[in-house]
Image (cartoon, rainbow, N blue to C red; front, side, top):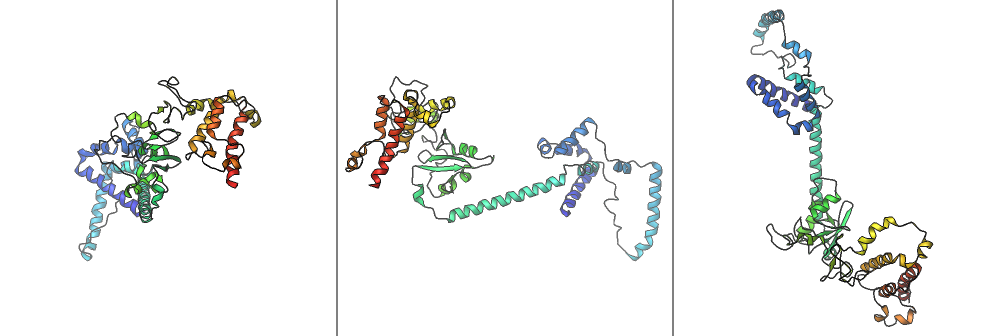
Length: 406
């Protein structure tokens, strides 16, 4: 409360000084008060401004009554003052130099005080807003201290550098996850983070993951629990200097940054075809169906993008009905499944004939199966029902389990 009264008295003093010493500046003062950014923060000021402009505002009547004394009332007041002076003359001899204390409430308030008094009665209290600002500033200070403590803890914790040796690092911001390609990272606006849907810059990535407007990519993007700011300090990430003219900082074709640098299936580059709807790139032989120069044009779409919108058109079926469906009606779905399996088999354990790598494989497994063989059978129309295709896929993993048990 003392703080509120102190602020209130401070405002009164400013207004009193303005009205006495700078009366011609009062309009300028209120013009400054009624600035748009202030009106947005304190809605009651906008109401006050509107009422003043349209003439509907009524000043506090009690305050005006003190301003509009009649001639007789003024004379009576002067007589009372004179009597008071005579009465106090005797007291002054006893207490020399003692000045009579006059309360601020008994003094005549300037006209513009009535505006403030009515503001205090407003449900949007100016002092409450100031107190709210103080609370917000206090909370912001706590947040800054907390962030500083977290940074100090982060710096003090030893880093397991082996986690960060991979070419692509897992990153997250809020609920959004992606992979940060270290070879693409250069500056905050270089497209170095790959999500399921696209390539994006660290600045774009943090906007997707946070609802905060002031989210910063260095502080809010995490990799193995560490901020990118920490990774920059540890030289795990290399940020290019300002004015760098390399291909990453100043690409000749910015659209190329929207596409993958390697084949989506085999993770190798060179001589690839790019899907027009997604970031994926493929070698002719890695995609299913296999690509030929006559297969695609300027608007070619990969199997993932072709099948995606068609998924919503599928009629729900029971497992048994789906397995008994003709393979001819489900070729693309089978290819889609195989592409996912190829993508996950990074060590090519299930891709080729395992008997070529393991000498005793034929003695343990009587009916070998691998993904390239399934692909060949699918392409040569060896399957009639979806059940047959699924059975061969299951056989690949059953054989693996059997062989490793033996």
